[in-house]
Amino acid sequence: MWIDSHCHLTHDRLRHVGTQEELVTKAAQAGVGGMLTISCQISGDFPAVLKTAQGFDNVWCTVGTHPHDAGEETEKNVSLEQLIELSLSDPNIVGIGESGLDYYYKHATPEDQQAGFRKHIRACIETGLPLVVHARDADDDIIRILKEEGAGEGSKLKGVMHCFSSSPEMGFKALDLGFYISFSGIVTFKKSTELADFAKEVPLDRILVETDAPYLAPEPYRGKINDPSLVVHTGAKIAALKNIDQESLARHSTKNFFSLFDKANMA
Image 1 (cartoon, rainbow, N blue to C red):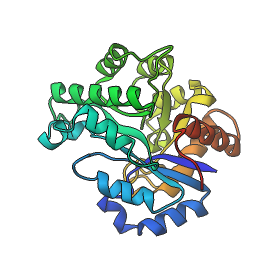
Image 2: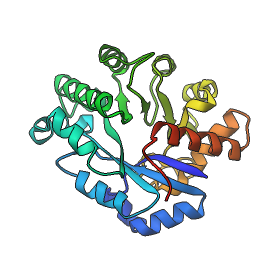
Image 3: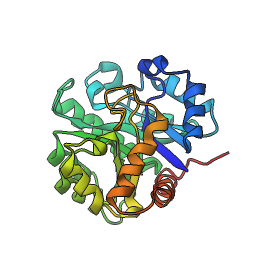
């Protein structure tokens, strides 16, 4: 059984390939036993994200603000106390995020992104829920802020570097802080040789797989709308890189998901 550790089931683009019920059924037929649907705006998509998770026994969700939206006043106005209260308000909420830093698109200032990132980290430490980290062109600041907020040995902070595509150096630093690494369809792309080499080095007990659907469909579906059923192709690629069978990789990555998102459970 596979788990898609990061997807966006409420995204409008997915409506072009099926209803949520159809997508969950399609995923199950492909061997995907569960999925985590992600919040990007507390004041925007979160109610729909939570409603989706509440509608399926094998779908869970997060609550949080994407770095692209960190400058929105409605997101900035969500206090740490409110974020903590929201994150504990429903058993289907099993993580906080996605939050982090994205200096590539710069939809929000670095200052607003960093302030939001720290708020999410502190909510995770307070609640014990894992942090889902988005990192793009901000490796040094991601690691610096995590350390400044107390990440590392003995810390209550746990989390995952989602859709990992940063440098191997940053990846090893994240592993040293106790974080998991989640690979998306990017690892299947022909030019992603450095990422593929890094995947070979990540311990089996720290790997997750994801689609980030509707984005980043893996080969041989690159360029098409991604959906949770396609996570099996990413898993197959990583299994091949690590020279193990797909069943073993599925077993390890699924165990890792439930170890990290330990509030999730199968009905």
